[in-house]
Image 1 (tube, rainbow, N blue to C red):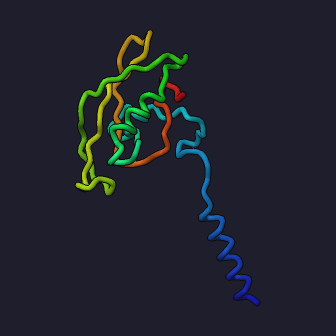
Image 2 (tube, helix red, strand yellow; image 1 turned 90 degrees about the vertical axis):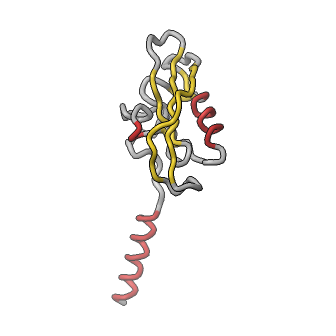
Image 3 (tube, one colour; image 1 turned 60 degrees about the vertical axis):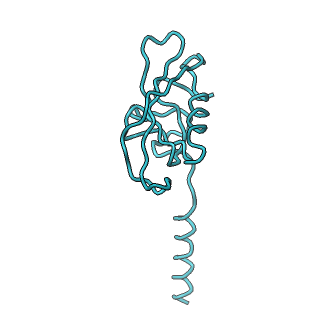
Length: 131
């Protein structure tokens, strides 16, 4: 009887421990990041995932952003930087893409870092919203 109870307890723990949770690592389940470094730092790049579809995923993501009042966003690719290891590249390494991003009425252009190799929960960086 004791073994049966122990097995039932272990199974219950496994079920609870393996269930998925909704929301993000920041605790905010909305599409807006509360992390001030999200996208603005090479250490916290936006992960759009998919090596083969990487450039398309980057454009799709950037096209999903608006200014805080729904202003259309404009962007230009600045280049690549910041080599890192990833299992999601056939070469074992990846580079981040940098984009200059702005919207009508914004006085300055910001630089966003995008990782086209790895996947993550997509959110809008501070100062932007997602359509």
